[in-house]
Length: 202
Image (cartoon, rainbow, N blue to C red; front, side):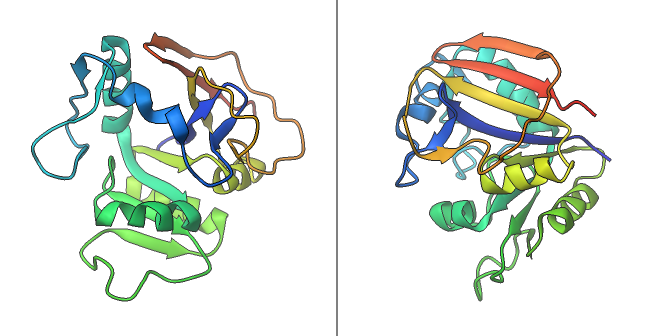
């Protein structure tokens, strides 16, 4: 089975969105560089034309490698509803598992490999089954925090943007205890973003 990575773009003070679920400037680095992200399997702008993301060269190489490694994305129902599940066409990976007590909306993109489960451990197990040897990416926030608390996360990945939110949706959700991470094994400075990855201590 592949690695399970908790991931999101995050402010310096640890927020992935503001109080209204808006990312503010967190994603600006995706569009401010001079290098398009080229990936074997990411759909990018859902048009088949190619990437509309343009980042620094360092970020382009890193992001493309991460996206190419993904097999399954795990997300919460809040994010699914906010982005309408990317209209059944996830930005990377072939499968999506949604943690939700509500089922998939009736008639919603029946061709898409989207699976709705009401418990985090079952969602991670399904995501790993679908991904095979590829990576499972768990969106940070409440679902990612539940997966970390359950011991189901192997690595924490953060794309840190130089902005302070002060309040909003926390990267680590409502976690209320200490978790130890290894020293970062990925430290890549892009333009307007710092890419970090940490293994979770056993």
